[in-house]
Image (cartoon, rainbow, N blue to C red; front, side):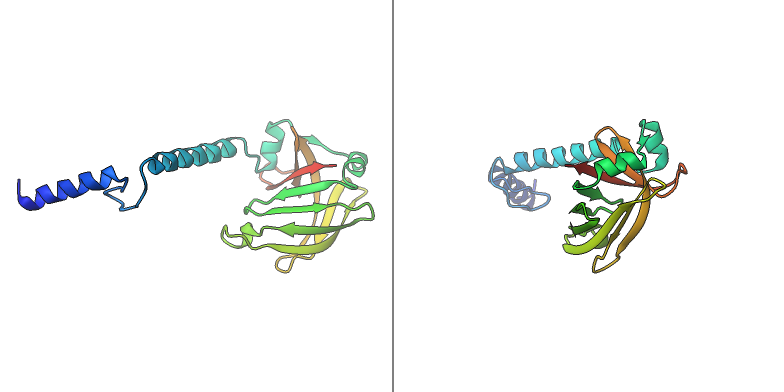
Length: 177
């Protein structure tokens, strides 16, 4: 073996002793690499678990036993309720439905910023239509909301769809008082 090869092997051995990954060159203290690997495994496992239970279309709502809420049920559930909305694009939005039909909302904006936080607030209104649709308007600085949706309950979550076709995308909500 050449002197150069021996020096390379010795350098790799020394780097491993102090916790430096010889292939990546990341400077980690002993034990940190193990903790990092465990954290990455938990994140990956959590993401896989979330995807398995995800409801993203009306077909998913039906296959998970979704129950459509009537106008009367919505009129009982929604006034004064705290709402957390998770969009298909990745944003989390929160607001409280005031009993006078107004709301003040906030969002992390991740769905419009490529995954980075882009916090915003907006004022808006909400109502339940005679046809049983929940209608919301929010004046976000970018991309205001103005929609009416049919609401379904699946377990402890709520899902809104614009139409009852299997391919219709859902909006996920957590609603509590």
